[in-house]
Image 1 (cartoon, rainbow, N blue to C red):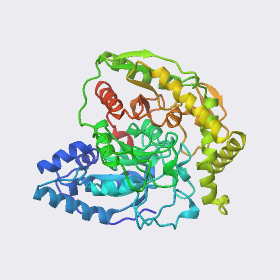
Image 2 (spheres, helix red, strand yellow):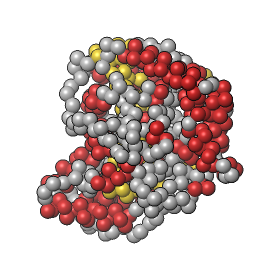
Image 3 (tube, helix red, strand yellow):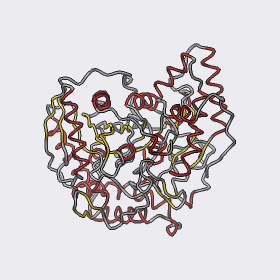
Length: 490
């Protein structure tokens, strides 16, 4: 339930257009304006709150607004900028938080009707770090139940819609975060990823999402021990995603698998001239829609024009094998966790949740966890072999250009003109959760024929975060992407 308060009065000189432009201001740019005193955190917050009021009723991306406390925090940030001195890295920036990232004293439902009254006792580590860095969590964003679908709708929150086409989905599970960014509700957002939940919404909403390597960003036990999963940043630019990644990363006492802080990601990166980049369109046998392939090849050509050496490679994978391996993993870890939490409340679940648990249970019964690990390590080795001699690999994020907003896809999906048994076979993200020590940055690649964005994944060697951001910054420069908010109610 979204809590609402009357908006504070804005300056009479501010026009609707200027307030919309302000709502789309990037985080890095906003920080510079805060420091020069040309913009106040209060003014930026009011712009995004206006934008939420104007657009969110049409896209349904938020579960809750923390307006009153956000205004208090923005006024405090304004005072700190006036006072000078040491300033926190996110001071005064509004941040939209994925609902699964708990806030102490607020509901933590995971999208479940049966858990709508569950209240979190502590902040999630990424929330603690954002707040300690001066970020202002002013809104929380929608997900599917248990974050287990690549669409974002649930019986509890309803349907979240793509701001570029309301009939289509922003993807999932961080769909609400992707919409919040694309629609001008925040310059930064939190996300998570166990099978593509950061990268798919980034692709479908024209935003940037970072799947950090396992352990880089701390999580919450016990599923923090699941080597497929991870939390991370989303933003509208590569530099802004790096800004938030730096705040989130580093060892945390609550997550023993978390890694000691690496060197911070820089604000600017060297050119890509001379880098060797592998291009893989199908990752084996994924059936890629023609417009997705065309946009991916256009990114590769643009990188080549910037001086990178781009060569096409193949991988020996099949979607059937990837699906079998990943659901063996889910069947032994995530599936049982979901069943434990929903016992006695099965009738209230979304159809996609029931199917996920059913598929996971069947996979676990069919394949031992050890055999799944053997297959995972073989696939990791095949990826390493394909990337030998290259600095990074690029490929599409999703083989399909779009999903319908209300879709459950219980009977499969059509990709590349053919029918697939399971809709997860239409997405190309899961292999890099299997190889989850590889960082992956998802960036826009263009527009699909249906009018919504498409994206590419930039895959790095294990724990080489810097290279994927370097390549992503180059893509952003050679194929600039502007959020055309006139299409979404601006």
